[in-house]
Length: 289
Image 1 (spheres, rainbow, N blue to C red):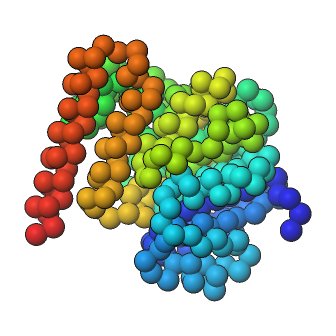
Image 2: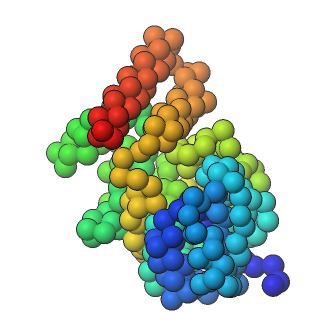
Protein backbone atom coordinates (compact mmCIF):
# COMPACT_ATOMS: atom_id res chain seq x y z
CA UNK A 1 0.00 0.00 0.00
CA UNK A 2 1.06 3.64 -0.38
CA UNK A 3 2.48 5.32 2.69
CA UNK A 4 -0.37 5.84 5.17
CA UNK A 5 -1.09 9.08 6.98
CA UNK A 6 -1.78 7.15 10.18
CA UNK A 7 -0.09 4.05 11.54
CA UNK A 8 -2.03 2.22 14.25
CA UNK A 9 0.15 -0.14 16.30
CA UNK A 10 -1.28 -2.69 18.72
CA UNK A 11 1.11 -4.80 20.78
CA UNK A 12 -0.32 -8.21 21.66
CA UNK A 13 0.74 -10.85 24.15
CA UNK A 14 -2.14 -13.29 24.36
CA UNK A 15 -5.71 -12.08 25.07
CA UNK A 16 -6.86 -13.06 21.58
CA UNK A 17 -10.55 -12.37 22.24
CA UNK A 18 -9.91 -8.81 23.42
CA UNK A 19 -7.59 -8.15 20.50
CA UNK A 20 -10.26 -9.38 18.07
CA UNK A 21 -12.78 -6.99 19.61
CA UNK A 22 -10.30 -4.14 19.26
CA UNK A 23 -9.60 -4.91 15.61
CA UNK A 24 -13.32 -5.20 14.83
CA UNK A 25 -13.91 -1.80 16.40
CA UNK A 26 -11.31 -0.34 14.05
CA UNK A 27 -13.09 -1.96 11.12
CA UNK A 28 -16.43 -0.58 12.31
CA UNK A 29 -15.13 2.92 13.08
CA UNK A 30 -12.19 3.48 10.72
CA UNK A 31 -10.34 6.82 10.73
CA UNK A 32 -11.03 9.18 7.85
CA UNK A 33 -7.36 9.30 6.78
CA UNK A 34 -5.36 6.57 4.98
CA UNK A 35 -4.48 4.11 7.72
CA UNK A 36 -2.45 0.96 8.23
CA UNK A 37 -3.15 -1.21 11.27
CA UNK A 38 -0.27 -3.32 12.53
CA UNK A 39 -0.29 -5.92 15.29
CA UNK A 40 3.15 -6.55 16.73
CA UNK A 41 2.84 -9.87 18.53
CA UNK A 42 5.32 -9.90 21.39
CA UNK A 43 5.69 -13.61 22.03
CA UNK A 44 2.06 -14.61 22.64
CA UNK A 45 1.92 -18.00 24.40
CA UNK A 46 -1.24 -18.94 22.49
CA UNK A 47 -2.60 -18.73 18.93
CA UNK A 48 -3.19 -14.95 19.02
CA UNK A 49 -1.00 -14.19 15.96
CA UNK A 50 -2.62 -17.05 14.03
CA UNK A 51 -6.03 -15.56 14.82
CA UNK A 52 -4.94 -12.19 13.45
CA UNK A 53 -3.56 -13.77 10.30
CA UNK A 54 -6.71 -15.86 9.77
CA UNK A 55 -9.49 -13.44 10.73
CA UNK A 56 -7.99 -10.04 9.87
CA UNK A 57 -6.12 -10.45 6.59
CA UNK A 58 -5.85 -6.68 5.99
CA UNK A 59 -3.97 -6.19 9.26
CA UNK A 60 -0.18 -6.16 9.04
CA UNK A 61 1.15 -8.80 11.45
CA UNK A 62 4.68 -8.76 12.81
CA UNK A 63 5.76 -11.70 14.96
CA UNK A 64 8.39 -11.03 17.60
CA UNK A 65 9.61 -12.65 20.75
CA UNK A 66 8.58 -11.20 24.11
CA UNK A 67 10.62 -8.05 23.54
CA UNK A 68 8.56 -5.77 25.78
CA UNK A 69 5.96 -3.08 25.16
CA UNK A 70 8.32 -0.24 24.27
CA UNK A 71 10.45 -2.22 21.84
CA UNK A 72 7.40 -3.67 20.11
CA UNK A 73 5.82 -0.24 19.58
CA UNK A 74 9.11 1.17 18.35
CA UNK A 75 9.05 -1.30 15.45
CA UNK A 76 6.15 0.64 13.93
CA UNK A 77 7.24 4.08 15.15
CA UNK A 78 10.34 3.58 13.01
CA UNK A 79 8.15 3.76 9.90
CA UNK A 80 7.85 7.50 10.50
CA UNK A 81 4.25 8.04 9.43
CA UNK A 82 2.93 11.60 9.94
CA UNK A 83 0.79 10.27 12.82
CA UNK A 84 1.10 7.08 14.85
CA UNK A 85 -1.53 5.79 17.25
CA UNK A 86 -0.44 3.45 20.04
CA UNK A 87 -3.52 1.43 20.96
CA UNK A 88 -3.87 -1.27 23.59
CA UNK A 89 -5.47 -4.58 22.61
CA UNK A 90 -7.97 -4.21 25.47
CA UNK A 91 -9.58 -1.14 23.93
CA UNK A 92 -12.55 -0.67 21.60
CA UNK A 93 -12.62 2.62 19.72
CA UNK A 94 -15.95 4.41 19.42
CA UNK A 95 -17.24 6.29 16.38
CA UNK A 96 -15.16 9.39 15.63
CA UNK A 97 -12.68 8.77 18.43
CA UNK A 98 -9.54 8.66 16.31
CA UNK A 99 -10.67 11.51 14.07
CA UNK A 100 -11.27 13.71 17.15
CA UNK A 101 -7.67 13.15 18.22
CA UNK A 102 -6.33 13.77 14.71
CA UNK A 103 -8.41 16.95 14.39
CA UNK A 104 -6.89 18.26 17.60
CA UNK A 105 -3.34 17.57 16.39
CA UNK A 106 -4.01 19.23 13.05
CA UNK A 107 -5.65 22.26 14.65
CA UNK A 108 -2.81 22.99 17.09
CA UNK A 109 0.71 22.43 15.74
CA UNK A 110 2.31 22.82 19.18
CA UNK A 111 0.60 19.64 20.42
CA UNK A 112 2.77 16.56 20.05
CA UNK A 113 0.58 13.94 21.72
CA UNK A 114 -3.16 13.49 22.21
CA UNK A 115 -5.05 11.13 24.50
CA UNK A 116 -8.82 10.76 24.63
CA UNK A 117 -11.48 9.91 27.17
CA UNK A 118 -11.19 6.27 28.26
CA UNK A 119 -14.27 4.60 29.67
CA UNK A 120 -14.21 1.45 31.79
CA UNK A 121 -16.64 -1.44 31.37
CA UNK A 122 -18.70 -0.09 34.27
CA UNK A 123 -19.17 3.19 32.41
CA UNK A 124 -16.88 5.22 34.64
CA UNK A 125 -13.82 7.22 33.70
CA UNK A 126 -10.45 5.53 33.57
CA UNK A 127 -8.70 8.27 35.52
CA UNK A 128 -5.33 7.34 34.03
CA UNK A 129 -6.41 8.90 30.72
CA UNK A 130 -5.40 12.32 32.11
CA UNK A 131 -2.69 12.50 34.72
CA UNK A 132 -0.16 14.71 36.41
CA UNK A 133 3.37 13.53 36.95
CA UNK A 134 3.53 11.81 40.35
CA UNK A 135 5.19 13.35 43.37
CA UNK A 136 6.26 11.16 46.29
CA UNK A 137 3.21 12.39 48.24
CA UNK A 138 0.67 11.93 45.47
CA UNK A 139 2.08 8.52 44.52
CA UNK A 140 1.83 7.32 48.11
CA UNK A 141 -1.73 8.67 48.34
CA UNK A 142 -2.71 7.01 45.06
CA UNK A 143 -1.38 3.57 45.96
CA UNK A 144 -2.89 3.63 49.43
CA UNK A 145 -6.25 4.70 47.98
CA UNK A 146 -6.39 8.02 49.83
CA UNK A 147 -5.72 10.00 46.68
CA UNK A 148 -8.53 8.24 44.83
CA UNK A 149 -11.20 9.32 47.28
CA UNK A 150 -13.64 11.96 46.01
CA UNK A 151 -12.96 14.12 49.07
CA UNK A 152 -9.17 13.91 48.77
CA UNK A 153 -7.44 17.33 48.83
CA UNK A 154 -5.56 18.50 45.75
CA UNK A 155 -2.16 17.56 47.17
CA UNK A 156 -3.26 13.92 47.45
CA UNK A 157 -5.40 13.64 44.30
CA UNK A 158 -2.85 15.50 42.12
CA UNK A 159 -1.88 12.37 40.16
CA UNK A 160 -5.39 12.19 38.60
CA UNK A 161 -5.22 15.79 37.28
CA UNK A 162 -8.46 16.59 39.07
CA UNK A 163 -8.19 20.28 38.15
CA UNK A 164 -9.34 19.31 34.64
CA UNK A 165 -12.85 17.88 34.36
CA UNK A 166 -13.35 14.63 32.49
CA UNK A 167 -15.30 16.46 29.77
CA UNK A 168 -12.91 19.43 29.58
CA UNK A 169 -10.31 19.52 26.84
CA UNK A 170 -6.93 20.77 27.97
CA UNK A 171 -3.22 20.34 28.46
CA UNK A 172 -2.10 17.66 30.89
CA UNK A 173 1.19 16.24 32.08
CA UNK A 174 0.42 12.77 30.73
CA UNK A 175 -2.13 10.58 29.01
CA UNK A 176 -2.52 6.81 29.10
CA UNK A 177 -0.53 4.42 26.90
CA UNK A 178 -3.77 2.65 25.99
CA UNK A 179 -4.43 5.43 23.45
CA UNK A 180 -1.60 7.77 22.49
CA UNK A 181 -1.71 9.61 19.16
CA UNK A 182 1.65 11.19 18.37
CA UNK A 183 3.03 13.51 15.73
CA UNK A 184 6.12 12.37 13.87
CA UNK A 185 8.00 15.67 14.33
CA UNK A 186 7.48 15.39 18.09
CA UNK A 187 8.74 11.80 18.16
CA UNK A 188 11.81 12.87 16.18
CA UNK A 189 12.65 15.38 18.91
CA UNK A 190 11.59 13.45 22.02
CA UNK A 191 12.82 10.09 20.76
CA UNK A 192 10.98 6.75 20.65
CA UNK A 193 9.76 4.87 23.68
CA UNK A 194 12.52 4.00 26.14
CA UNK A 195 13.20 0.28 25.81
CA UNK A 196 14.73 0.31 29.28
CA UNK A 197 11.15 -0.09 30.46
CA UNK A 198 10.05 -3.64 29.67
CA UNK A 199 6.47 -3.06 30.78
CA UNK A 200 4.75 -0.19 32.65
CA UNK A 201 5.77 3.47 33.18
CA UNK A 202 7.04 3.90 29.62
CA UNK A 203 4.04 6.10 28.79
CA UNK A 204 4.74 8.51 31.66
CA UNK A 205 8.40 8.63 30.65
CA UNK A 206 7.47 9.41 27.04
CA UNK A 207 5.07 12.18 28.06
CA UNK A 208 7.79 13.71 30.25
CA UNK A 209 10.23 13.72 27.35
CA UNK A 210 7.65 15.29 25.03
CA UNK A 211 7.30 18.15 27.51
CA UNK A 212 11.07 18.50 27.86
CA UNK A 213 11.35 18.69 24.07
CA UNK A 214 8.84 21.57 24.04
CA UNK A 215 5.72 19.68 22.90
CA UNK A 216 2.30 19.83 24.53
CA UNK A 217 0.41 16.74 25.68
CA UNK A 218 -3.34 17.14 25.33
CA UNK A 219 -6.48 15.46 26.68
CA UNK A 220 -9.31 15.43 24.12
CA UNK A 221 -12.63 14.18 25.59
CA UNK A 222 -14.49 14.63 22.27
CA UNK A 223 -13.23 11.14 21.44
CA UNK A 224 -14.07 8.15 23.65
CA UNK A 225 -12.82 4.59 23.77
CA UNK A 226 -13.67 1.62 25.95
CA UNK A 227 -10.73 0.42 28.03
CA UNK A 228 -11.04 -2.99 29.64
CA UNK A 229 -8.46 -1.90 32.18
CA UNK A 230 -6.00 -4.70 32.80
CA UNK A 231 -7.92 -6.91 30.39
CA UNK A 232 -4.83 -7.99 28.48
CA UNK A 233 -3.00 -9.05 31.65
CA UNK A 234 -3.86 -11.16 34.68
CA UNK A 235 -6.02 -9.57 37.38
CA UNK A 236 -3.02 -9.89 39.68
CA UNK A 237 0.38 -9.13 38.19
CA UNK A 238 2.80 -12.04 38.03
CA UNK A 239 6.12 -11.67 39.86
CA UNK A 240 7.99 -10.66 36.70
CA UNK A 241 5.37 -8.01 35.98
CA UNK A 242 5.46 -6.74 39.55
CA UNK A 243 9.23 -6.40 39.36
CA UNK A 244 8.97 -4.61 36.00
CA UNK A 245 6.35 -2.22 37.37
CA UNK A 246 8.39 -1.26 40.41
CA UNK A 247 11.65 -1.07 38.46
CA UNK A 248 9.84 1.29 36.12
CA UNK A 249 8.80 3.48 39.04
CA UNK A 250 12.40 3.64 40.20
CA UNK A 251 13.70 4.34 36.72
CA UNK A 252 11.23 7.18 36.17
CA UNK A 253 12.04 8.80 39.51
CA UNK A 254 15.79 8.38 39.04
CA UNK A 255 15.74 9.97 35.57
CA UNK A 256 13.52 12.96 36.19
CA UNK A 257 13.15 13.75 39.89
CA UNK A 258 16.07 12.39 41.87
CA UNK A 259 18.68 14.86 40.55
CA UNK A 260 16.75 17.80 42.04
CA UNK A 261 15.96 16.20 45.41
CA UNK A 262 18.14 15.74 48.50
CA UNK A 263 19.75 12.39 49.13
CA UNK A 264 17.57 11.56 52.12
CA UNK A 265 14.42 11.99 50.04
CA UNK A 266 15.77 9.81 47.25
CA UNK A 267 16.65 7.09 49.76
CA UNK A 268 13.16 7.29 51.24
CA UNK A 269 11.57 6.99 47.78
CA UNK A 270 13.66 3.98 46.80
CA UNK A 271 12.99 2.28 50.13
CA UNK A 272 9.29 2.96 49.66
CA UNK A 273 9.32 1.42 46.18
CA UNK A 274 11.19 -1.60 47.52
CA UNK A 275 8.74 -2.01 50.40
CA UNK A 276 5.77 -1.77 48.06
CA UNK A 277 7.33 -4.40 45.78
CA UNK A 278 7.89 -6.74 48.74
CA UNK A 279 4.27 -6.39 49.87
CA UNK A 280 2.98 -6.92 46.30
CA UNK A 281 5.08 -10.06 45.84
CA UNK A 282 3.90 -11.40 49.20
CA UNK A 283 0.25 -10.83 48.29
CA UNK A 284 0.82 -12.50 44.91
CA UNK A 285 2.41 -15.52 46.60
CA UNK A 286 -0.41 -15.86 49.13
CA UNK A 287 -3.12 -15.59 46.48
CA UNK A 288 -1.29 -18.06 44.29
CA UNK A 289 -1.46 -20.84 46.87
